[in-house]
Length: 133
Ligand SMILES: [Zn+2]
Image 1 (tube, rainbow, N blue to C red):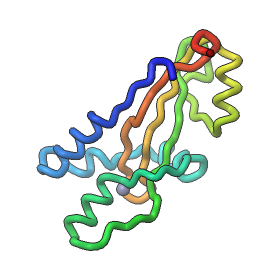
Image 2 (image 1 turned 90 degrees about the horizontal axis):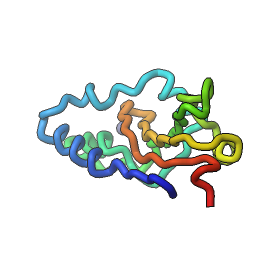
Image 3 (image 1 turned 120 degrees about the vertical axis):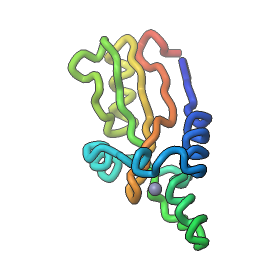
Image 4 (image 1 turned 180 degrees about the vertical axis):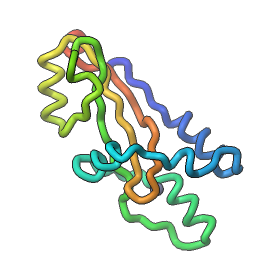
């Protein structure tokens, strides 16, 4: 994928800061109600687990809850998209349609936990006709 950026390093660093008490949990579990709604209704499931829920399980010394509470929500941004810029993409088909219809834009995938509200940018990449093939 063109312009693919993985934000796992930044995520790990942030989770480490939370572990050390340098960043309060409420500051990283602050998902906007609209993001939470999108995550619940159209978010894609992922095999990843929520790092904050995992932390809570560790602290409470209870078995890790394997329930998939983490959802991936994709937003699209770009001047070419005009009024569609900043919109949530509903599914893979819509993303493919946008890729064919517009020259260039960026897709941002945000992970969001339905239980604790953890949210973090997971990855971003370029889409559109200019980047096809
Ligand atoms: Zn969580």
